[in-house]
Length: 111
Length: 200
Image (cartoon, rainbow over all chains, first blue to last red; front, side, top):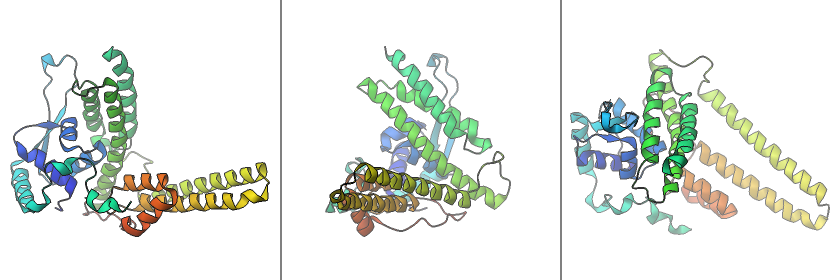
């Protein structure tokens, strides 16, 4: 598994609370990734068995809200994610400020 | 008031998602469709998105992303089904490579026809020969831009910026963006996707 910046952001969010279920919009907000990036990534993680998904039960208090699909790390996924994230050099410090949009901005100043 | 504006938007977004989902393999289609429809309603009812019109924009951006996601999911599913040969595609679904290329060639041809037709129209409408060098420059600019955009479209990744940002840059800064992209942003055309290859 190649750890790209985007994947790193998703894993960081997921690993922060491995037991918590996240739905897509939730993850999109937390990672600031667009849906076009996030869903293929989740599908790939799911295929590799690192992420699991489940449908929420229809809640009576949801007032007609359609049930959502929730994603969470599997035990294996949590282990792999921690390992991968631990290998990220601390100097890169990607957690907060790189989460803002221009992810590779330092080299792009030419223009 | 909120429900008054979100309901039509919800319908539009659902229709977009349905359209995108039709390109997915049959076994995951309805589930994805339900998932994404639920997400749209979550976006449209998110009270923390402050100016309420921003929710609509977000929902539409979500749909645009979904159509990209479908393309990728489809590609990886195709790679998978080629391995296991039990393809679940609806009949007449295009095969990956050749038709993909045909679509791109057709799109390129259409763009060129439009450009040439435009130039001819302008030449006829504007017969003053002093204007021709200007037109030539414009045509060269458009051609160069089309080349850069086609290159970005073929590439799987670009350096420093996302492909979309590069494309935008090429469009906005007509000669400069393209030159910069070719000089520093270009990685090369996408490798043909092998079955076990995962995109970053």
